[in-house]
Length: 452
Ligand code: GLU
Image 1: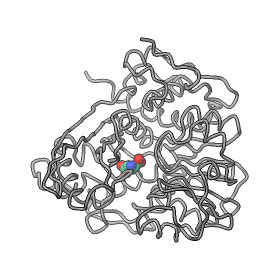
Image 2: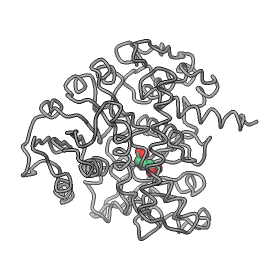
Image 3: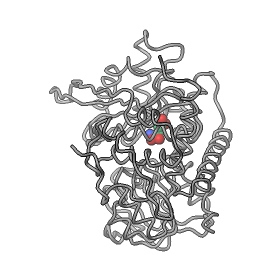
Image 4: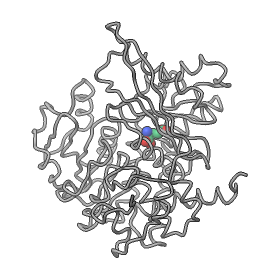
């Protein structure tokens, strides 16, 4: 079976000059990745291999990173409110721990599947390295739609899943967190369930997970952290495009945690939200939408649709809305060639993980639209997760000013590393971000060696 990526979908170019970095096909073959170029994991590894080629990453590190260390799949029964039982599927993928314990969220979504979780775990390895927190990468999830279940059912699902993976996670080994569909209440149930399994609990079992409620070991500023990091990145990167937040109109795809906080915080910096979209529909108001008011509307249930202070528009109208900044903050692979061709913006700030496909990216590049890559742009969440973990481990709590200040410092430092890699290697920002992340991992492997 050939593993050659078709030019239609593979990253054809990683440099503004159009020069393509050749991908080491022998590695794709050796680790037996699907030849399907639309496969998210194949796409993710291909991007890494292109960056690896440009920077001259040692061959054995490319090979190690091309597959996760562990892929755990569990099936577990849960009693529903009507007395019947259903069997659920859960995942935890531990991609790499060269820099520290595995770290990454748990996604509760009906379309969660292994390749998806593998890609997201891979991206966590890159993200943690780039932003300079001492973690590796992991990701997990449950194939479930939380909207289909009562709070009592969700509690039983989450607790039973926790017990199924309890021996595979730990405060010094693998530390989950929230992701799409999961929230601080779920994290509290996980920490509580884990703490009852005393033989795996350790001194402070709640440190097994981050994104907890403030009352139970959570950190101030964690809930807004990903959105805050998106805005920190924008503030740092916009001047290179001769833009300031006050001059920016912006649109947001996905109005959950990341989308709504990005919108509220960017608005506080003087930017104007003019269009928003989620699973319920697309809305626009050229005079501006109050992001805080829209977030409250969404928080009452439903979604952006039926928001009375904006007009319902079509999907095409949403993408064609003229803005300076577009923030995709929903799921992966949503900005494909078609969407990229419609966008009328200067910058795409990736709040979601892997929202842009290689094909979409190619179209954006050809149209001169800058992409702030997810492993930089949305790293604020895991950075404040790290602060939460440090607070748990040291039995201390930080005030919000300290959290915000340290987050900004991490984001700005990471942005500088990306900019430096870009000017050194003359490549696009995504490749530069991967190179900066890979450099740190390569140094750790050089110091540690490979056992035995
Ligand atoms: N799920 C978030 C992400 O994709 C946060 C992960 C974490 O805090 O560990 O970055």
